[in-house]
Length: 510
Image (cartoon, one colour):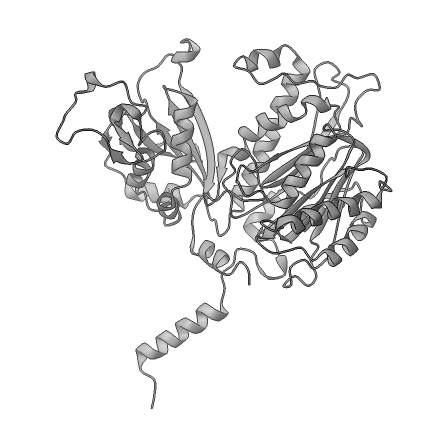
């Protein structure tokens, strides 16, 4: 008997779902044409640093691609890390943090990384394996006489699985043998740390400092990450190296400030990983022989003033923040299944914290992200995300805690009886800002919906880059007003949610 039309359709659908995949990363790890413009073909790399990679086969499905990376300084150097706030920190994070602290953020060699297995939630054996990785890297440099490792460790991949240490320990010497200082060496290391990434993320640039403008310094950084990304006081995996000279005792300060203004402003899917880490190394190889290390002030409310007391410190901080911001944006551009790069700009007359809470809420809204993917100007989803943002929805003056009303039913209070809320719909405006420089498209203005030109909205949403502008206090303001009266602005970067995101993550382990 012939199959009916409906049965045939179901069989074809099932076959397609099983055998045809729409992953972002093409077969053979070819870089998609649309992403090739983000991959550098050359670079200027910091003196005294080397990079390389090797194949270990950490993940069974990987039969030929490098999955071990080494980034090291020829001479021991200053270094530090910033890590995730996820309670269940992976073993490499715990070991690396302890190594950096015990070595007082100096006398470090570099970092060894494996992809394919996160070594997260793996108990004492996982911590022992992380130490073994560090010591295997140390041994390549003859550093075997120290109680504390000199190498930091990173791992990325599947959570809850143990590392195949025999394969890794055999591959680390091969990675060491591959070390070099050329663009190709750095690119090989950047490729080795990729998992679901569709392209290696590597940036390098040069800079100078005001006190000795004739000295050229370099900085280079690589990062990986395309999913499980919502950094929370940490990053994903990132390695940044510079040949400037920094004080080991304060090297953590510029890294923390830069991460807060870059990686902590991005979100792919709202999931904060167990393995988010960035390592930062400075070996001083390009500094004048008599040059003093840059020493960064403690973080205080007068931070901008303190930074300006030393022009070199201020210049380096600005450079590092800009550099980290560009590195973080590459992660968003490679979000799993992403087709759009979305900038969310929030202005608030109340505080940076209010703007941050609103921006984070929009950036993590699945409904906003799917609307962007569908090129649908559904601005109601944006307003919804603003209204339920933590610190906005449970604002004390509204008598609400954790979404439950604590007031009396039927009791009405006039606005004059309440303190000013952090968000007032009557002063709220939302727009799309085209990236081609044309006029912004107003969606909602001071509490009133606009008659949206849907054709124009679709034109804007067809673009690869989209900006959502939120003005929480869309009123006239004076840019020359005192600091506490000026508008506060926070910027976040996210991407859209596509069908491919579900496919990639549904099949992640297989």
